[in-house]
Length: 379
Image 1 (spheres, rainbow, N blue to C red):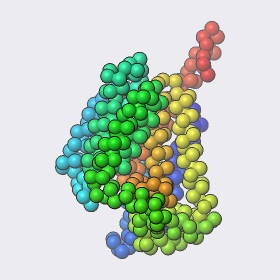
Image 2 (tube, one colour):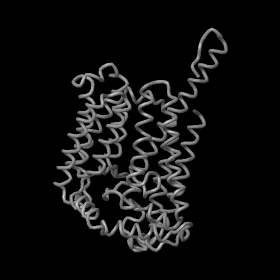
Image 3 (tube, rainbow, N blue to C red):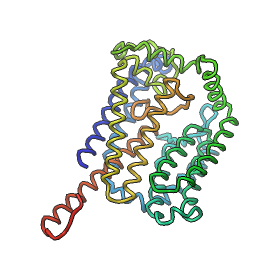
Image 4 (cartoon, helix red, strand yellow):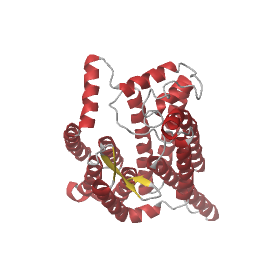
């Protein structure tokens, strides 16, 4: 377990280091034009990376069992924060997704995602014997999924809200909920989500554009078109760091949601595959930590965190390659950072603590068994 924790840490550290390099390259031209300094956005991202590393260290030292005890007040606080964001939050481009605290601006959906994973893990570990009962076991959990995801969709942040539904359903399935309950709930969520997607102009435009592309074979939108040009021009080994043409204001959000395109252009197919392999390592390591964890809450929490990170990575890369409609989700640990980067690092810190805590418990059990050979230890 100790080796798994170290693997997670260094894998994430390498991804963030790579993110620093690509953000510098992808944002320099825009920073010069907008802020008259090539290092403006890079400096901001560097601050978030340092805060993220600190978050990993701090939360790796906090016993993960604590989150089970505070999960209910935590989810209630985040529900209140989402309501506040909806009515009084900072609005950018027509979306109210942020709370401005003066010294920092927080995107509440990123915090709520982690809070919901913690609370569902706590409920699944505490209500295991009632899971077959829809009313007393499954319904209380699905209500929280509905409340949190609905408040996020209303911001509007459709892609994050629906992805949170998917992650929650995966966690409920792994927790032992009945498939028919999950399938029925998912059908309701998808129907409501489809209606919501058609109500909001930006999501309706993205989905219809994607559907039209499947029928006609044309371009999805300007961003995806430029992203594919960027990926294609990278070839096998890339054009070299700092030599991207698309980052010169041709590709919007080159340092944010579409940073994988710049990475592919500068580091080529080899670099892109290496990043995909890094996410695969993170996924396998996270699942192994969950498998080796002794208590049910730790298992589910490790699974939920791992699935959420990998899902975001998969969707971001799928958007960049035109495989799914544009969503606006960042590439974990690499895209220009904000609340998302910091709270992803908080999640990683919790995952590392789960691994280290169970490593210590196992060592203590083995030591106790050595002192008393009559005790049996399941190693």
